[in-house]
Amino acid sequence: MISSIELRAAPPTLTSKMPVTNLPSEREVAATLGNQSALNQIVAAALATLAEQPYGKHLPVHEGQWQGTDTHFARRIEAHLIGLSTEAKLRVSEEVLGWGPIAQLLDDQSLTEIVINSPEQIWVERHGRWFQHHDRFYSELTYRNFLHRLARDSGAKVDFRKPYADGRWRDFRVHRVGPPIAQGQGQLSLRRVRPQAWTLQELFTNDWVPERDRLVVHSALTRLVREHQNVLILGGTSSGKTSVLSALLAEAQGDERMLILEDADEITPPNPLSVKLLAKDQSLDDELVIPLEALLRQSLRMRPDRIILGEVRGGEAKDLLMALATGHRGSWGTLHARTAQEGLMRLEMLVQMGAPQWSNSTVRQLIAQSVQALIQVSRDENGKRRLDAIHRIASLEDRGFCLTSIYQRSS
Image (cartoon, rainbow, N blue to C red):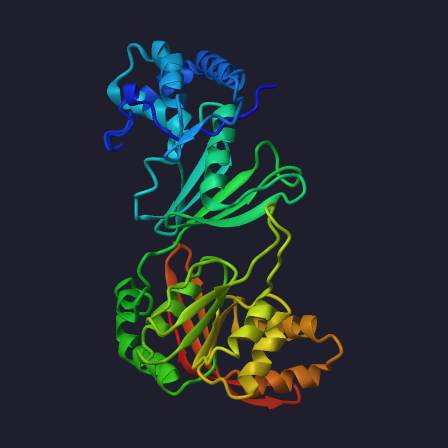
């Protein structure tokens, strides 16, 4: 079996340093894919030849590039490229040495997500809707090499001991799963992380709330920030929870020190005084694990004006609420839930994960003392993000929490 080899430098004879702007048409891609079997043989032969060199897979490295690999590999496939257009040659160059069929997608800012289910199945999300990409990887071999290059650059390495991993690459958050929990070479999800944080004005411009409600909503949200209320933002997957959180952080005063705690690097600190701490899962490179609970304890010693938890999803909910109940006002976080009632129920369960010996009444009292408001967001049937409601926790009654609506979307 031929092992995969990571190839970094692009062959100069294929002029792959040129920007990939004029992309091959679907017909040219189809014609190239029609020669897939021959290309696979040439790729396999080139990799076999490299593996037989004195240094094996570990070729001499000079200035961060594999010496000799680019020219050798280019010569191996050049004969196959006779008759193809310059654009198609560039596409093949991307396939064997670059980012393959997703190279043309990386700079498209209208795309919010790229998912790869298999070498033949690539999907993109644009404006909240999914579309299948017309291009694909030529073979399992080139797809595997693509995954190796991405793992090297993002840190998202998987194997049978740990078949899932997260990472950061360019302006994307990377999530990868591999065998044995995934079929074939595995699946990949790339979610674009916005370089600049959203602002409330940008959210309003994107029809986050009806125009008639914008003044009321703006006043309510800024008041929550100004009065240092502890707030949770609730919503489903990709409903814009993190975007809303970032926009509200930008409304805080510039001299407030915020400690941002995340397990995925998404939120940008809103001022130079603020810092971010990232949780760490066990990786293939080491066994060090740093959970969010540990970050919460450390953040309390770092003089925070606000504690910002990217997402509340486990036993750290207990530590967060205890910190908020003891005086850390103006703290924020996000939580997966469709409604305020579901959010409070889920928060109870998460707290009990960290403190199973506590009774329901104790947990509810802690929540009532710690959280003042809930912001509920969602996506409509067209994939558009929207604000549904802003609730305040008015009191804790025998039957549960009593909520009052600061804002409720009417349509």
